[in-house]
Image 1 (cartoon, protein in one colour):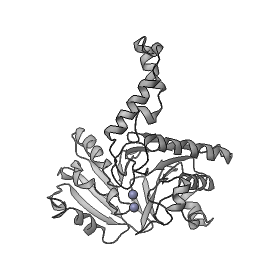
Image 2 (tube, protein in one colour):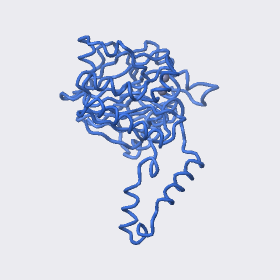
Image 3 (tube, helix red, strand yellow):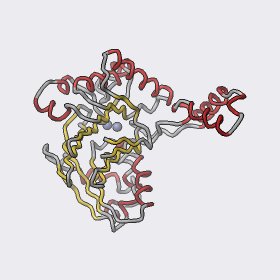
Length: 312
Ligand SMILES: [Zn+2]
Ligand SMILES: [Zn+2]
């Protein structure tokens, strides 16, 4: 399966501000030496050497992750503002498609892109929604009604289906998707996605709890040996202590968790909206340092960022 990130920011959309853009450009200009400008090749080498936090951004769209299965089935996790860009990409393909949209929970940053998801308005398409929350259809419809939005979900012309999940989850072709309740104010579900012996876990909006580390057979089966874990790592350790019960985790706890369950690839997700790209990059470096300090050599740690694709 292939994971693709369309929105990785937590809590609220966070556009790059003019001041932050100017600051990036200014920092880049100050790094240039005359030799860097000599030829097209030297200019390209200079750009290639720049750190991502200067020459790029993790992006400001809120949670949306696409999983394309080996059978070309399209699963989508959350409908934050990133889903709008995903919708544009799907529409550019100009053909009917089937989509399976899994909702982790219903905080604004996870559903506010849905009214702008263009494929939902195309009658050729099929859009299935999934959540373990029994009344979730009315929750989704509730954000698309006056005075919040000018058109209702009834006007989404795709063939819609609402599936309330049990703990067993759902089998879609060769893929199994299973929910698990995580600690978060008002509740949130993670999803384990399994296909052909590979496993990815999407666990946004998660305040890791001692029970998540318990060596129970259920935890072992759900978390153990995952090939990829997309996890809420919104805070530094200090901020996580200050913001206990706000429902998010620190990068260091995420690293402990990944080590505890022998996760192969740790993907830090749901970035704090008040953090700059540089600060988020420092969180990645700290997580990397922390894992190497634990002598964890088997875990690769990466930052979720818009446009990132990962093969699992
Ligand atoms: Zn969130
Ligand atoms: Zn939340």
